[in-house]
Amino acid sequence: MKVLVIANPAAGSGRGRKRTARLVRALEARGHAVELFATRAAGDARRRVAACEGSVDRIVAAGGDGTLNEVVNGLADPSATPLAPLALGTANMLAVALGVPRDPEELAEVIDRGRVRRIDLGCVGTTRFLGVVGVGFDALVTEEVRRTRRGALGYHGYALPILRALRRYRPPRLDVRLDRGAPIACGFAIVAKLPNYGGLFAVTPDARTDSGHLDVCLFRDATIRGLLRIVWPARRGTLAARSDVVVTTATRIAIDSAGPKPASVQVDGDAWGVTPIEITLTPRLVPMLVPGEAT
Image 1: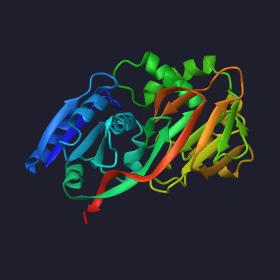
Image 2: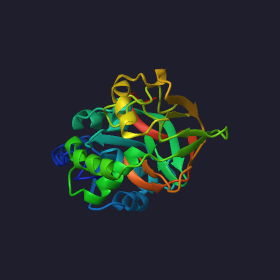
Image 3: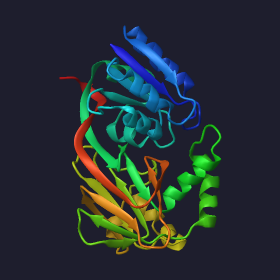
Image 4: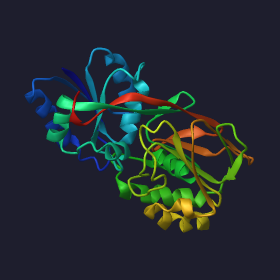
C-alpha cells in the first residue's frame, strides 16, 4: 500500500516531528511504501495532494484541523482516497470526534487495518470544510493569527491575537437564512459538523460528522459583555437553554451582513474571507479511517 503523509511542522506547539517520524517507521515496518512531505507554506499540502491523487492508497494529514482542510481541498475527488489525521494541532477537533488515536503506532494499525467511515462534507462557496465555520468574533481572531503567526501556535499563541481582536472588535449585524427560511438577526454565527469547538467548548454538542445536516448556533448578543456571558454555558454545553442563543439544524445556510461592513469568516480555524456566504452540505462523502476492523 502507498501512503502519503502530509506533515505540517508548525502545527500545534511544533513538537510533532518525532511523532510523524514514528508513524512513518511504523507504516514502513508493516511493509507500506511511505512518502513524507513536509509543508513550508500555506497551499503546499493542497498542491502535493493534487499532484499525488490517484497514485496513493491512503493520505495522512499530520497536523491540525487546518492541515486536514488543505488536504480535502486539494483533492479533485474527495470521495475516493481514505484519509487519516495524525493529531498534532492545537484543537484536533475532527480527530477527537472520530476517536482516532494520537499514538503513531496505534494510528498505523488504523491506517493498515481500520474501517472506513464516510463523513459529511461542507462547503462555503467552493471551499470545503469538515469541522466548523464561524462568522464574527472568532473569525476576527483568525485574521490576527494569520497576520502575526510566526511558527508554532498552541493555545497560548491565541492570547495576543484575541486581545488585538478585542481592541478593534465591533459586533457585526448578521442576517442568517436557514434552508431559505426567514432571516434571523444575530451578531455571531457558528456552523459545525463536530460536537467540540476549539477543543474547549461544546457549542454544538449534538453535532455528528455523518448526521446529514449542519448544526447551527446563533448568538443574538455579540457584544463583548454578551460573549463573556456565554463562555461558561458554552463550556458546559447548555447554550440551547438560553433565550439569547438559537441552536438548530439546517442543510443550506446563507449569511450576510446587515450592517455597513461585511463580517469576517473563518473555515476550520483559518481566516477565509468575509460575508456574504452560502454554506451547503454533501452527506457521507469523505472516507475517513477510524478504529475498528475493516469489512
